[in-house]
Length: 210
Ligand code: SF4
Image (cartoon, rainbow, N blue to C red; front, side, top):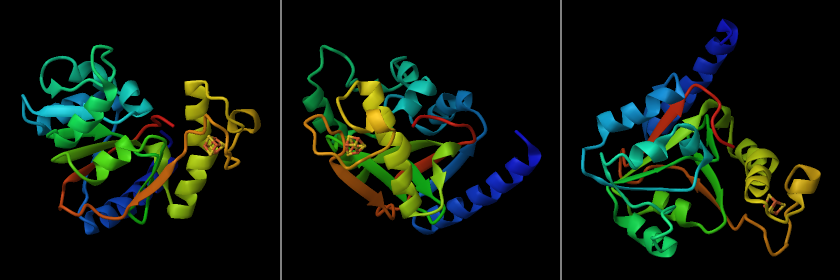
């Protein structure tokens, strides 16, 4: 990475870290996506129960493969033998919930849009610890910019990935549609980890996910 780019990025990260910590989020920073799973293994006790919120980021970090390795008791929402709605309910009781966020602001908020809402529900309440893996591409200035990021990138790209019949796929950004396949139902801003350090934001200094 260009050193000037790196310096500015580090300043932005420092501001985000300070503000997130002021609001009781735990924060870590990793250089590379390859470090994510060994880092999780170093901080999550072996044999803990775990579940995930849908995330392209944890695909890119190969975290699903690590979760299936047997180190943790993973409740796998993608296992066709499992009832996914039952998994969503069981996820509220796990020791470790692993997911990503659509955007994190330098002012210290996590901003997310969900369709079903199971991911944001578990981030808000239930799991003992929530690990939020965030590529540096998701760091934005404030909530307005976070929302814009979701409308311009995250939601349309998820529609494309899921092959949804939505207008954002045709025009390249959100038009606040009302079509049957709309994937955007709830916007949630997490301003604070109400139980201190329950939510652990793990920044990775690479682009990850949407
Ligand atoms: S509200 Fe509709 S148009 Fe906007 S991102 Fe969601 S699915 Fe696409």
